[in-house]
Image (cartoon, rainbow, N blue to C red; front, side):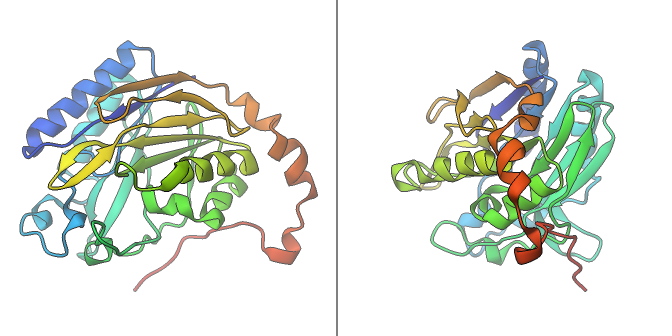
Length: 279
């Protein structure tokens, strides 16, 4: 199938950002894509860089909600499986970094919430997000079995393994990563290693643009199940990263034809990452 990563920036006007996002979905479909992935907080300035931000609460929405309804309608119009990301507020008032996943008919397959929440300079995410309580779901879509690892979750091998253990063929990674954030390409290396160890494709979609001192890098990429980069986006500029992938390669990958055969989960668990409950 053909996938497209929408490497984009978010300006100050949210409605204009949404209009551009919906237009980008059309461009992806025109390029032949059957699935699109958006970066983290696709429609908003990166408010987690602050411990306090007066306008951030106003953009938190339920799922389904006003924004996701429009994204779902566009997915249905274009027959496009869509992995989105936004700031979610649930019925209990809790807020999450969330990726709703839409089928090509616009139906909501489910919502992945970021599990691991960080706190350091420029990324004060513990001030904004509850730890995700949906586990590490894998969605049976019309184009394949899709998992989502939202930004910081990609650093945790146990989370990436859980997606593989649940049968993911493609792991989509909405990200907000800054230029030079990881020395010597380590943020790329760990994702390539996860693809190789778990026998799935990975597709990281990073935001771009300068946001009050943070400069987001772009450089989105797709890795195959052997850990090889098969597509890469430009540094620091908006654009589509379009790539053809063959999910049959997962079955014949080194991981699934060799490594997984000799696993001993009885010694260290079965790789599951069940739904977490939070009162």
